[in-house]
Image 1: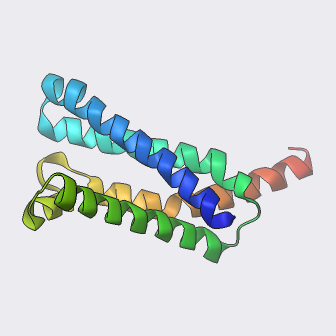
Image 2: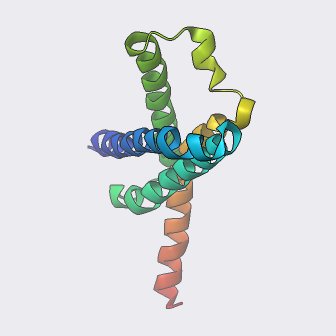
Image 3: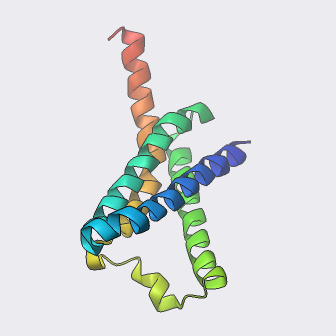
Length: 139
């Protein structure tokens, strides 16, 4: 059941990533150019991932540090499988073009988004524990 919840949350993140990409292409790129558009898009997507994690990961039940890191690893794995499968099989893009997304060229911060994806569940669990402890203390 935990795996189904994890996959469902990742699907929501995927939807937000697709919407973010559309927003970047339709609004940000034409109005501010590639470097700034990519930085803002990466920050926006990272914020979405963190918010989704903070809202939904605590609803998965009590997770240990190892479980939350495994959840982040699962999300990163699903993201990479999706990215490379979609890019190669659907779009027919060559490997060197797909791997360009994992550089910091032209304002691209995609590698940082991957790091945020990995650590977001852990941050949500840790923050949730602190928030729960603070509310139990009456503060």
